[in-house]
Image (cartoon, rainbow, N blue to C red; front, side, top):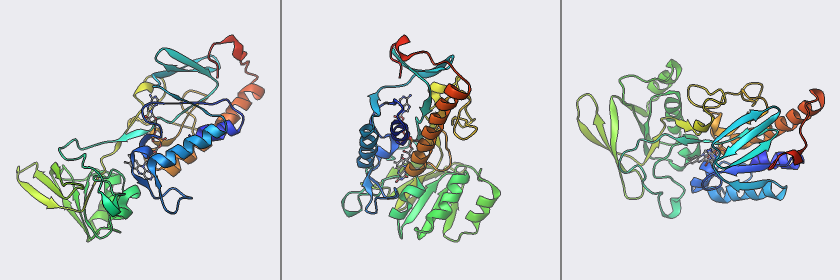
Length: 315
Ligand SMILES: Cc1cc2nc3c(=O)[nH]c(=O)nc-3n(C[C@H](O)[C@H](O)[C@H](O)COP(=O)(O)OP(=O)(O)OC[C@H]3O[C@@H](n4cnc5c(N)ncnc54)[C@H](O)[C@@H]3O)c2cc1C
């Protein structure tokens, strides 16, 4: 939506296509407390409504739909939506990602009610939700760089943190392992998996199984962070664009993908920062690059863009 806003304000004709509820991941969270300009926080859906209204004010057209693929035809880029195809000069891919879940009973515990309604029952983002968990005993599941680094970060708030990992050693790099081992608040629970998350309105007790001995223990906690990565929504791009082994869209020269004129921004490209502000920033950058791309291919390379009237549905 930030890309749409910037592109529309640059006098491009822009259509945004989005499946499901508008606003993506941000709209699924009760409250966003770290988006600049909102010192009292904002509801996730409320903030996304504002993003959408802002872009639409400058002429961005919004359509509900699922993109099934993109392709190229000379200088044109084609965006396929089942029965419909949109012909365009540039494409910004921002199809985001979905956090990997444990898929155990109780994981979908609802948010806490009452005056601390902003706490998620189970969190998938330490930067987003860590500050909601002051003076609690926390648990983190994971063993990669993110889980180790974020565990250390979470001890700024937690009184104690159990770091649960299914193997006997962490996959994360030695620097992060060292960070964890030197942190007196972190207790490593190795070769263990969570079998069940228990709690009425929050993760209050974890049923943990030692995969080697089969022993089951109960771990009382004040919060659970599942930091086992995210899966980018890029399946529909396989075979069309270069993707990283993680599935994220590969970009070079800033935000351009392996197909000229096709750019990528946000969580479908970025496996590190994964924030509303960083995704919105990348969206704005892509719009600036797209404006430049159109100007350069039109004037410098003298690409002959067919007149829009020659094709149905040209944008
Ligand atoms: C529970 C939760 C809480 C969070 N809390 C915070 C927070 O407090 N602060 C913060 O900064 N960040 C937070 N984040 C992270 C933040 O929401 C994301 O970093 C950000 O939304 C990424 O934006 P995006 O546009 O790249 O992708 P997304 O938000 O994932 O949006 C992608 C959109 O593309 C759509 N889409 C996917 N495939 C297709 C297709 N083929 N065709 C059409 N549409 C498609 C999706 O349905 C979705 O609407 C949170 C994330 C989650 C899951």
